[in-house]
Amino acid sequence: MHLDVLDLRNFYYRTQLGRAAQKAVRDRVLALWPAGQSEMAGLTVAGFGFAVPLLRPYLETARRVIGLMPSGQGVMPWPVGLPNVSVLCDETRWPLETGMVDRLIVLHGLETSDHAGALMAEAWRVLGPGGRALFIVPNRAGLWAPREGTPFGFGRPYTLGQLDAQARAAGFMPERHAAALYIPPSHRRFWLRSAPMWERMGQRVSGLLAAGVVILEVSKQVQAPRRGGLGEAVRRPLRVLEGQPRPKAEPI
Image (cartoon, rainbow, N blue to C red; front, side, top):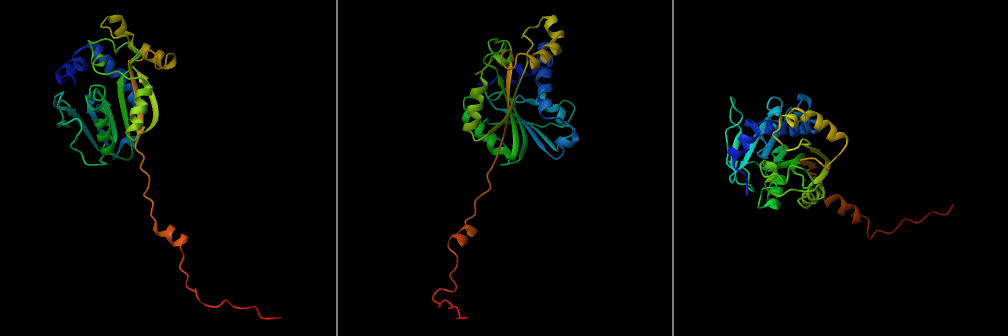
């Protein structure tokens, strides 16, 4: 069951803890997928769940940005002050053509879904060959998953191994993994002010142990179809000279 879009909006845009969490996760996403013109020009970038806080850096450089919000969650207009790019959709039937998306970010979508396998299959469908996706989920071993007062304490947390196995079962090829959100889930001013320090320290020291979220980058690899024409010709060549007598060597 998905969180309500108003609760997600209020957390990320109206609380200091939410803004700190947004920055921590977005900075890690940008380290994996830079938003520069050379990296994103001509690409279609989509987000599913409540991924719009992570999509803003790509608005200026990507060819197209789409925010997909599941019907169980609800939708809100986004971005503020610009033409709306968010759309309400069924979590397992997205209003996108097959192979249309080059980059996909899933945040607050997978762990709250009652049909995670079908959601993964839909993500596979909309990605083009060679396309990449980031699945961002609460870390089962982290500090945020047990705290129900934030969106990361809602739904089903994952270990990296569980997320990797589910992605492989859907046909994805795992490429890289990362983690973010090392700040404790506290509204105390000390923790909020020191959030950048905790993120830097977490990346250097603790790996996945204390991270609030696990991030898995996957790709869609499609094998080229095998054509039988040439192979058949080689395996069964035409016998043009069948039935003709073989030439005899002349005596010297």
